[in-house]
Amino acid sequence: MPHADAADDTTAFRLDCGATWLNLLATQGRHPTPTPIERIPTPDRLAAWLALHELTPAAPVTEDDVALAQHLRRPIRAVAWATITGTPAPEEAVGELARFLREHDDPVALLATDEGLRRAAPDGTAAALSRIVRQAVDQLAGSERLTLKACPEQDCLGLFSDPTGRRRWCPSPACASRGRVRALRARRAGIQSDDMTTSAPE
View 1 (cartoon, rainbow, N blue to C red):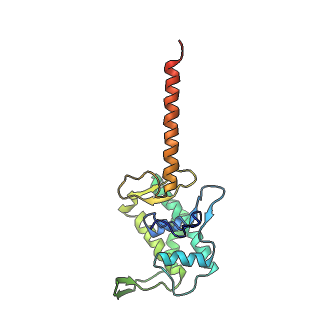
View 2: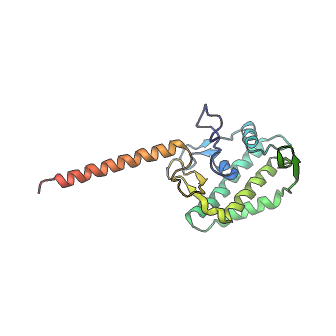
View 3: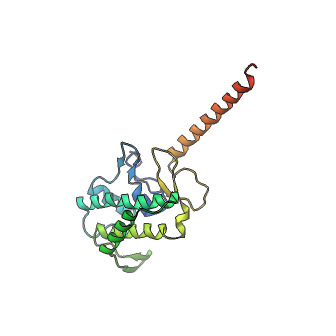
């Protein structure tokens, strides 16, 4: 299921980026533009997003939790972008993620259920976010970092995982459509330019 809340696509949750932590980054749409889209602006929206990822905390989501989730996107994105571009990870961002994990340790408590193995629900939103940050760190520091890509559309630049290595754009159909249309126009413009050059009088 690529999206939720399909009736309003600008605020729809992106669930197709390849990992929960990547989906967290996608809760801010069009982030490189002057008008980014915030998809988790309220406790209710963040609670809904966590529920979609089976991370509903035992305690209610608060405004402070929303601010924390929004804030954590920045250091995660900074380290991920450095990983994708092959540049050194910003020390400040790395330190911030390390401190967060130290301060919000979330011990693993396993449950055997009728549906299979599960983890106990996180105590609060910070614990849920700790699981997400740890997933991000594990991927960014492991071999799976090689599957990470950034969408080339300048109003997106969304990060996603591409294990096949064949995807050019992020999973959003809109980005692929715009990119293909632009490439087609560029090819046509190039053909017309070549025709004018070859037919020009000497």
